Length: 353
Ligand SMILES: CSC[C@@H](O)[C@@H](O)C(=O)COP(=O)(O)O
Image: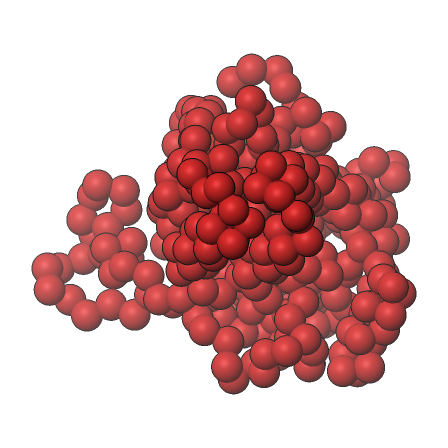
């Protein structure tokens, strides 16, 4: 591991360099820090699908970079031909993962800007510069979110988090972990308990990795020890990220979040969600959100090792829904929304105009 620190944003999960997309291959962590380099949008689509890059804000920016590559790959000589090539790439990128709204948000933003260009060259420049700007803005947004959320945490808090809503789920700094980083930067001594997050262990592979790397006091617990940790006074606040938040305040996040929130309620522990406005979907109703179902082999084995009998039925949802009554506040770059969310969430967007 080199000495670049994740906390000061010098290490980016995904970036644009010399007309290529560079990503940290998250499937290799925590064993090796491997960078992959892509010049084809199909490779980016595959990276999103296979979790080389993952986390809602990171896949939003990756989708935008995918379209930037598609614009360079296009042999179009007219605006119409280029827009049609981009539309085709958008479809392939969009089909990779259904639950995080940021992917569609990033793709839409690029498609809209592309339409404003007059010439093929102008469109390519616009698409690339907008995607790069989105990556830079992601870090600023995370820092603003961190500042807004850090006031909710106190000196000597032990904060539980689930999955990875950290630097690795964004371009840098993180959403939920951005709040924890900001709390530390404001002088508070905070400890973290990270859940393992089965089946693919973003908590142990990524959250524990990046927090330890940045010098936090972080302990890992199996997902099954959430109740134990809370009942025994080991945790006094929770903060998680989100893949989609609808306007009623229902939060879609990594599978197991609902259990953590329910346990927090049972023990009177504040449960916060940190996410940028790009994760808020004002259009879709909670019951219409698609929950990604993943391959059963993630559950029947750990890595290469088989841990279940052959031909067993498996239910492997990647996300679950936490209802608003379990949520103490939704931290965004524009402020903290509290119940009733149907009133407070739209206000965040007014503040954005
Ligand atoms: C900041 S992304 C939201 C996270 O809290 C979390 O659910 C997550 O890591 C996303 O899931 P993943 O399946 O790893 O892409």
